[in-house]
Image (tube, rainbow, N blue to C red; front, side, top):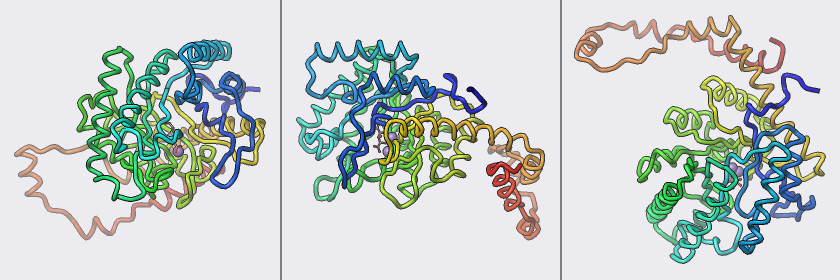
Length: 383
Ligand code: GCO
Ligand code: MN
Ligand code: MN
């Protein structure tokens, strides 16, 4: 039965093979779900109504596969995607699981490890391009340290820049047309990860050889782990033309990397996020980088995936209602006009010659309490 909360392809909802295929292992306990073959994951995504599937190289092709095994696997996977009407919008590379990356990949001290990481990433780009992906995510999960005795952190930044520059040249050379999206995280699995926040990456991008090719992939949980307001990071990325991809999930503050179902922990923050993405007209994939509770079987995984999309669509409908609410709009228009000023000698002289009622301005109530409660009423479904 389809309703206003049924996902459609134009919603661009995607999941990683590693998300629906997550087997529930954690640092204290082993897997709780059987392995899910990539073709079965694609079938499941088709069944729940998703649009896209994303993957790390080794989610699909084992790290020690031969070229002929790789070709067979890719062929089968492509067939499964066609059969279930699923596209591959984004590809990425696993530079964190294999023990060779225990000291990092692009930032590792051993130049041979850095070279291997580049080679592995170029091959992952080949794979992504063959599957039709146009976005390539780089998440430097092991690019960090437990002790700063290991290297000077500015050396890590230089190595990271060298790697991203190299990979941009590779994409140009091969005419892959990738948009590279850098994903920040403050910690886990390393004690500290370099480029801890989306803002740090936005600063870094400006120093690259091809800044136009590189943007960010902010993740809800990662900014929240850093104690930051996720929406503000997304807004800055958007305003800079750098919101190439987004990882939606949820997280309680001050915890481990929980990767909960979208909107399940902080529904109000999720509401502002959905409203922002819809208001500005974000056209990229809406990727859920989350996984089902460890208590679930694969029926529960489907509930998890459906829940991510359903919550997004409910919040989208609530955001429309918020925008159409006459009282909310009246309160907003009273709080001030939004036009920006620019410097001219005439404007300077006018401004320097103006007088302001400083005390009166400071006395006027702004009605944000009322505005926020109206928001709560909309959100909780009583308005
Ligand atoms: C995490 C990360 C990853 C990345 C993924 C794509 O905290 O585990 O969010 O899920 O998004 O590896 O590169
Ligand atoms: Mn994460
Ligand atoms: Mn992520």
